[in-house]
Amino acid sequence: MLKYIYALINTLNTPKGMNKMISYYKTVNGKTTEISKCEKECWVNCISPTEEEINFLISKFKLEPEFVRASLDEEESSHIDDENGTTLIIIDSPVVNKSGKNLTYYTTPLSMILTSENLITISLTENSILGEFSEGLIKNACPENRKYFVFQIMLRMAGKYLKYLNQINRITQHVEEELKKSMKNKELIQFLEIEKSLVYFSASLKSIGIMLGKISRGRYIKINEDEAELLEDVTIEFKQALEMSEIYLNILTGTMDAFSSIISNNLNVVMKVLASITLILSIPTIISGIYGMNNPGIPLMEYWWFPFVLSGVSMFLTWAILKHKNMI
Image (cartoon, rainbow, N blue to C red; front, side, top):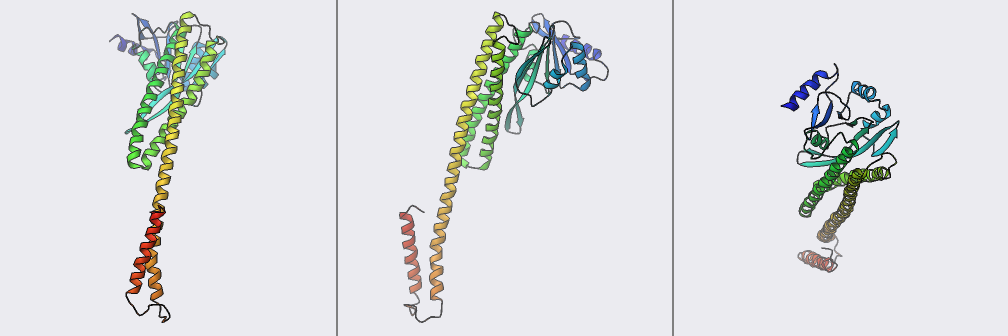
């Protein structure tokens, strides 16, 4: 009930004309809880902000306009930047989209801006990982400890990558079994979709690894011992996810090449059999054409049954030769 009261108050306090897409959170009774207005050391979560909301964030928290614009660029890759005491961290977050029976995996940028007093997260769409934190589902989450909270979000994100990679692996195995039975284009198209998802994941995880290396060297963020330990766990998890994605991608690429070769070989076999059948069936046509001419000089022309016998013997000999050559 308290959460709904906070939400109502927050809606009333939202400037006129501005959609309620900015929320504020602090730790209340050991749990991350939404509060009615912005306070010092609170977590500010913004989802798909309007132009008015963007201007509000820039003026309220003294943000660099380039930081906010970069946060709204869906093509932005993972990186870290610092300007006038404000640190911008953009990290690619894994997303799964269900369309009918098919699952599509891709990444979308999530921005975390560290100011002297607040943590601001900006995303283009609802983020399931931030949703878990905002609903108080993550134990020991403390938005007031901004850097530690950022690393907690990253650790949860690494877990999502690993979860989705395991799902992709199971889907790949299922499609592979179906492909062994049918050899249809549908399964190959599914393989292409899975390959595209793995390419997205691999590229994102590589850029995340580079960014984590910069953070661990202390160039952009000064971290204490507890934060360093958590950052090390984050780095290990993302490294494991990268290794898994590259292994699955290599296996999938090899499997697709193998099945493409099998399909091509099957097509060659079919064409070879059809060519052999055409050759055998053309023999009676040739013989009947010769003996159908009004030419008394053709041998054994007076025996009406001879063309049939000759056709049969020729077809049998041709079949035997093709069979010996493994052409049919």
